Length: 147
Length: 304
Image 1 (cartoon, rainbow over the protein chains, first blue to last red):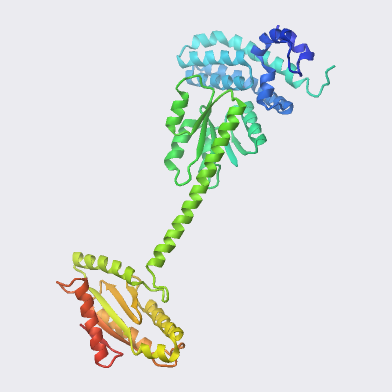
Image 2: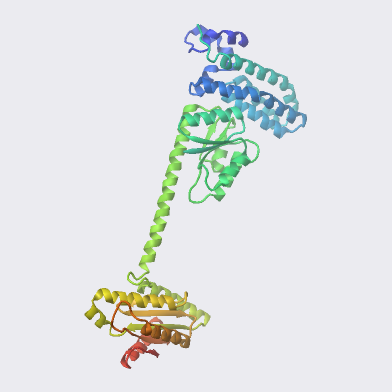
């Protein structure tokens, strides 16, 4: 489970060179690729934490705008809302979430709103996971010295 | 260099802004297309622009279209950014007028390289625009100098000839009168010989200032050469031209010449354009009138 791996703080801050860690981190990097995310912030942990914090604070808004568009049966608004979450998730190296948002965006573009309704619980779950993982990997470990 | 970023997603905006700051750019960041457009309509605004394709208000693609329609001399460098998976997104963005396209998630090395290209091109545009401004100013100065008599600031012969041709064809086409006054300062050689050329030059300037003072804006007062002058008077019959010539003559005679202790006067010929006249024949007639004025004792106005 990704959440288990996130608690294992010994692998968090150092580049993982061992083959074992690479293989166990696969599930997790698909959910949130911390190294990639930090690399995208030019290795700046402070900035990475700030960006993750802003993302987490925006999370309810992402879901809310998708839900509102779905309730209003507004396919165009839904497409835009899903597109926005897709881009944000992609930049934050949350590839599962980004892919799911992309699927919803595509359905919305084709006007298949029922499929979007079906995907909404999964999207909420993925977003909640993303928030939890980022909290564990980026926000909480800041400044802590790992033994 | 200042960069405008329009990106509605807060974490992506923070990331982009922070990366650009790290690379030495100053950033103006807004979260929707309407704010971006407002900034771009300010007289002082960034010329390197990164726009999210899809955002509230005016979308990035529409902003770049509008920008291209209204921008002049100094063009913007616009990068459109989207998390598009559509294969034709870059082509659509470039077709709309964008200079470049960046896909989300950003690859930071590529983003930096692309923004640096934009910075380089923007600097180039600025330098080109500055050079063009200087060139235009220089060209204005040159063409003014090419039409001006250096000593007196009156029109020179080249400028007179241009104006004369235009005025002549306009007078013929509309059936309007047109007159010339030909002028020669009397015994001017004596001023140069006894007082020197620098005093002579001062007398010429003094006379030229008088001409500038007395002619109308539409008249062309020209130093023909030496101490000879000619005035082109569009829309003027010979009588009115004669009245002006007489006013100049008496004003010059009565004016106490600061520059010369000698009394300097001027002789005037006046002629109006007749049917059958061309440029040469009109000039010949006005000069003949001037010679008559000289022959008859100078300091007078004679009609052709």
